[in-house]
Length: 283
Image (cartoon, rainbow, N blue to C red; front, side):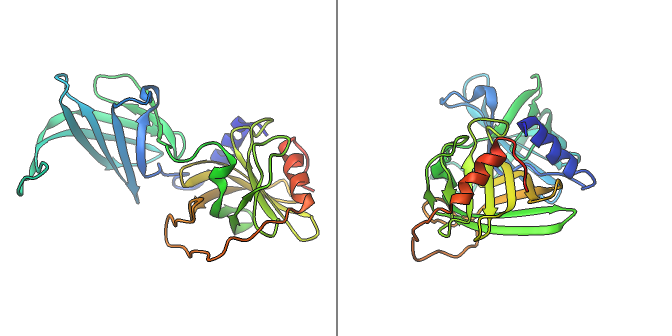
């Protein structure tokens, strides 16, 4: 399945929901300005339908400054006044309170996924923005850890959790199959074929029969995509959450494993991974 089709599936699966996704909380950047040098950045958070954005930027004189915008997000879009502030505490100062220094105009956002979108700042044209991923490369090593995968659709609510422990080497379509210790669940970044740019996960039983597949794109600790049970053409809207880093550090409230277990690869896991990645059936 082509990645554009994946996006269409996600959007269609989300139809009927009040909101298909919320922007991920964290550091965002103007994509075209990401050159490794100091520049502008955005801190975005959404709680319920309240959207907050803090922006660090510069005055025409070169002095640094920051702005705050708050508003309601609806249909993945926000329009809010962009307020500049001055004063307030500095390093080593006593108690001081910042003050509003004027409304510089309206800032507008439209989000195309939980990790991508567009911003229109006062006096500027619309520009692409994205969640800043500085900790996880598009590599097998970034998949190690505990993951929670929850899908919703005609099958109802389906949840899986997997602790991916070791890289078993690449399949013909990816850069490294990372599996659980029992060899019955594995995920891989796809580098070729119709799923290139996404993560493909496969769940099998002890007899090597395919149970479910997962396809998603993720940024930092969160992902979106679809899951599909073997033998059906029905795709479920999928939400993915990383629960621990590859070093075993929790990203939320999770348990810590005491032992690192060795992995035994089930030969059927690799077969189903390559079969689905190259357009094979789920039967």
